[in-house]
Amino acid sequence: MEPKFLTFSPRTSPSVAALPFFLSYKSSFREKPNYNLGNPLSISTKQLGKTTFLGESLNIPRISHSLGNLKKTHVPFGPVKAAVKRRREVPFDNVIQRDKKLKLVMKIRKILVSQPERMMSLRELGRFRRELGLQKKRRFIALLRKFPRVFEIEEEGVYSLRFKLTPEAESLYLEELKVRNEMEDLLVVKLRKLLMMSMEKCILLEKIAHLKTDLGLPLEFRDTICHRYPQYFRVVSTGRGPALELTHWDPELAVSAAELEEEENQARESEEKDLIIDRPLKFNRVRLPRGLNLSKGEMRRVCQFRDMPYISPYSDFSELRPGTLEKEKHACGVIHEMLSLTVEKRTLVDHLTHFREEFRFSQQLRGMLIRHPDMFYVSLKGDRDSVFLREAYRDSQLVEKNRLLLIKEKLRSLVAVPRKAVIKLLLPPKLFLLNGSNETDFTPT
Image (tube, rainbow, N blue to C red; front, side):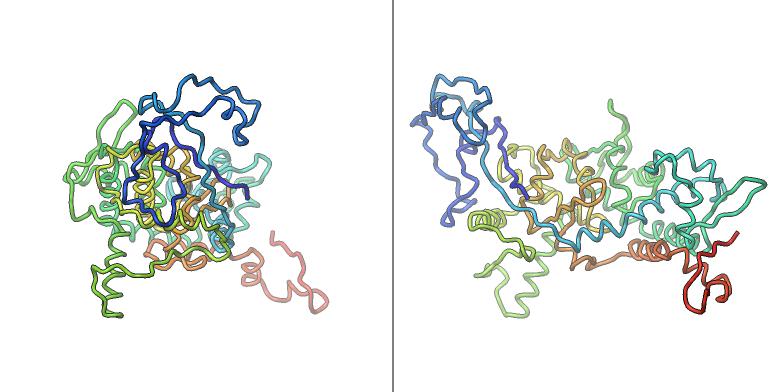
């Protein structure tokens, strides 16, 4: 893979601009480097024009004075190379591959359950081709027959067909509705924590809707949950549309999943090894995926970033300057917490980019995620890139699964049943035997 490059924003201060991304192993992020800006660093325009990264063909403006005479907000500097190789990991990519059919089935089911009696004709389904992402020439009857354990096709008059959910799929859907109602208190906590992490404690409902499936929110959450708990949040009108605003700050909720896990690890280690909880471990290693061979500089950078003081995603980050390591540390904490709130501990990278304004994310959000392989994995499979919370998975399986995810896995098993397997159960075996061994291509009429 080609290396990724980290570029700093020209709005940063000279102390940040002069800070090298790869630090010596003797230095620490906790100590502020002492840079003397009194001595000008003269960089000629001729040197800038010959840099191998920018290329000789680019027109670079002339600089008639040295950096020492510039103000803090106008320090020119070139991009700093900070490459971390992205390695493809098959177990995570398989998670995306196996859910391709399931996502299509869930889209069709979403349209179907919105109809009266959860039944509709195939002709009406044709109006949703673009929403389903299907080609115009594809026949819906052939598509639905690929999932015989999920959809059931019936005749309605001459040359008219309609479909509905099978009894098994219907039962799973009703069970899912029941579980969502029972988990409503947990869903309210997720919305409160999401608002508490934002800058203005207010997020547009349109942006929250991008995460409704990942968070486990019901389809109609705008008209139900958002209006049932005025003691926690309320819907307000803005110039860009309705938004959900926090009305009560709860300090007990302002504890991230990473902090809770660290407390549990320290308590476990103190019990097993009889260690003092406050004493740091002598050897604290970074767990990286197998086969990811980083250079010494890259490994040093990952270790030093991890050893930086933890910045809570619920803290005030208005004073953190964009482009600094502290702001990136905070952004990683926010994304870690957001992924911890999701059902499957993963989401689309595009969904996170919708919250750039609320959480002051960098414009190179995908590159930032790739730079931290110890925390996240970015999969390029599927139509859009996905990001996984690495610590929540063992190979391709989640360590902890809630009730909604268990229901989803049951639906996935129904989707995986091929059509031939259903035909074998419904028709006598003699119809499938030819010359005593091979199966025929019998299709019921």
